Each structure stands twice: as C-alpha cells, then as structure tokens.
Length: 114
Image 1 (cartoon, one colour):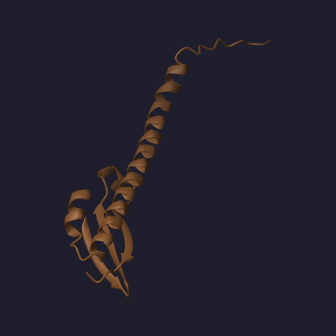
Image 2 (cartoon, one colour; image 1 turned 180 degrees about the vertical axis):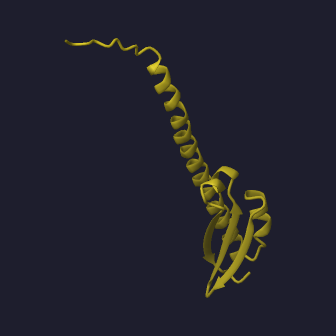
C-alpha cells in the first residue's frame, strides 16, 4: 500500500525571499563600505601628495590638509633631500565597524630647502 502525502508548497518562495533579502542587503552594505574606504584612502593620498609638495616649497601643509581632509592629523618628516607628509584620519562609523579605525596616507617630495 502506497500513501501519497499532499504537500503544500505555497509560501515557501516567500520564506526563501525573506531570508535572501537581508543577505543581499548585507553584501551590498559591505561593498559600499569598501568603496567608501577606498575613496577616503584616495582623498587622503591626494592631500598627502599636495601637502608634501607644499612642504617641499617651504609652505605649511596644515592649511592644505585642513581643506582637503578636515580633522586629519599631519606629521612631517625630513629624510635627506626629501620631505614626507603622513596624514591620518578616522574612518566613517561603518568602516570602523569593519575594523579599520583609521585611514592613513603618506607621500614624499623633494625638499627645495624653502
């Protein structure tokens, strides 16, 4: 004797969709946070390059860094005939949740002795 059990699959697609949506949102949030981190890194690198060139000409780089990366800390170091500028700034709250507390960039330029 064979028994046939009637299965009702109604609602299973809704349940799968309800599980899928948070996973897709999480992946999307991680991707956007990664892009935000990369953009912030590029902005800091550009600011460090401009600040290093300014410091090489004898101009205080703090004003440039203040305009391009507000709230960032600046450290200037001279290495022979080079002047190097390191900029560190706090990442966004989402980026800090990922474990990247600070974002840093460094650039060097020739020291004109100015």
